[in-house]
Length: 125
Image 1: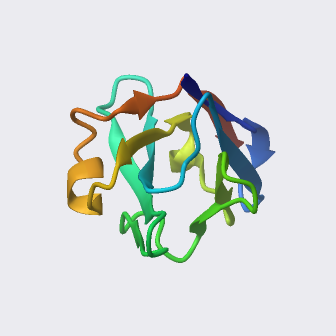
Image 2: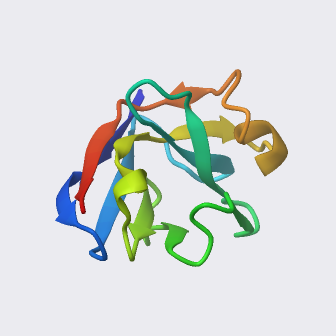
Image 3: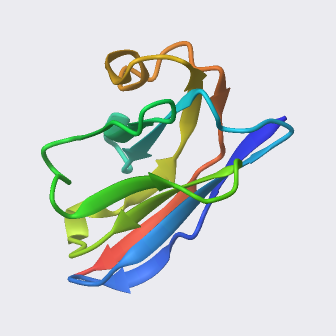
C-alpha cells in the first residue's frame, strides 16, 4: 500500500509538466489528495488539494491559475498539471492522501494516511 509521485524533470521557464500520483493497494475514492513541494533549505509548502468525494479543489496563491489538480479516469491516479513554470517552482513534489478529510486538514500535511515519495521538478530560467 503506497503512493508514488512521478513525472518530474527539467523544464525551461514558461514550460509545462504533468505530475502523477499513483496509488497501489488502495483506490483514491473518498480520499482527499494534496500536493506539496519542498525546495532545498526551505520548509515544505502546500500547493494544491482535491476532495475526491465532490471534486472541490484548492490552490496556494503562488500557483493559482497556473497549476491544476485532477483525478484520472481510473481509481488510482491523481495529477498536477503545471503550466507557465517559474524558477521558484523548482522543488521536490510529493502527494499525500487522507481519507475524507477537508482541504483545511490536508494542507497542514500532518497526520496523513498516506504520503508518497516525491519527484524532482527543476525549472531553468
